[in-house]
Image (tube, rainbow, N blue to C red; front, side):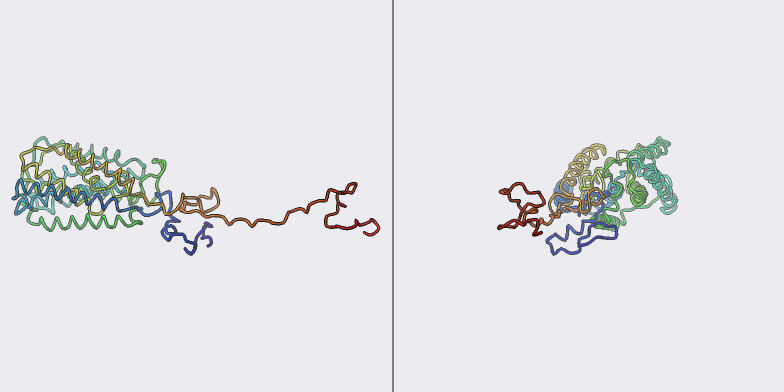
Length: 406
C-alpha cells in the first residue's frame, strides 16, 4: 500500500483479497465514463439473433427466387451489400464518436450523381476530385462540431442542407456514364468490406480504443468541452465518415441498372443510421459490437431483394424507419446490459474527502481501535470528607499521609 506521484492512494498488491479487475480500474477517469470494461455478452447475443434473422431471410429469398443467390444476381446483391455497408460504417463511426453525421445520405447521393455524370472520364479522374472535396467537407464539419462544441446531428444537418442545394441543381435523372462494372470484383469488394467491418469492431472492443473513440460522449453537462483528445478523434471520425459515404454513393451508382434520380438523400441517411443502430451501435456513442454491421447490412439487403422478388415496392423511408425503431431497442439493451459490472460494493472515494479522487468500486474498512480496558481516571474514594481535591486518597487502603510526613 502507498501513494502515487499525485498523492492519491495506490494499492500495490492484491494479497488483501481485492480482485485484480478492481485494481485495474481504480485509476479510470470518471470524467470520461464509468470505470471498468464494457460487457460484450449483450453484443454477442444480439449478433446471434441478427445472424438467425439473416439466415431466415436468405431462406425465404431462396424459396421465392433461388436465382437471386447465384450467378450475376448474387454479385449484384454483394455489391449492394458493400454499398450500403459503407454508408453503415460511416454512420456507425460517427455514432461511436458520439457525433452522428446526418449528411452521409446527401453526400452519397451527390457522389452518385457526380459519378453518373463524370464516369465516362474514368474512375480515377471522376473519383479523386470528389474524394478531396469530401475530405475537406468532412474536416470542416468536424471543426465546426469540436471548435464550437455543438451536437453533431445539428452541424451535419446544416451540412446536409448545403449538399442538397447542390443536388437540386439537377431536375432530371442522370444516366450512369462510362462502362465501369463493380460486379466483376464483387467477391473482393465484399471480403474487403467484411474485413474492415469486423476488424473495426474488434479494435473498438479494446477498452482504451473504445474509450478514446467515444470520449466526446458527454458524462455530465453535454455543453462542457471534452478535451483536445476528444476533439481530435471526433474531427477525424467525421472526416472519415464523409469519405466513406462518398465511396458508398459511387458504388451504389456504379451498380445501378438505371439512372440516378435526384432527391434529398436523407432517406439514405435514415437507412444507414438505422442499419448501424440495428447492428448494436449505441445511439449515445462509444458502445458497439463486432459482427453486427456485417449481419445487419446483409439482412437489410436480403430483405429488400426478397421484397422485390415478390413484386413489392418498398420505400427506403419505411425500411429505414423500421430499422431505426428496432435499433433504438438495441441501444436500450446495450446501454442497460453493456455497462461495466461493479466488481465490489458501492464505490467510495479512496482518497481524502473532496480531493477529487476517483471511485474505485471497493471499500476500505478502517481498523478497529483497541478497546481500553483501563479507566482513564482512577476512581475517587467517597467515604472520606473534608480533604482537598488534590489530597484525595486513591491507592491508600491504610492510613492517610499526615502533613508532616509529606
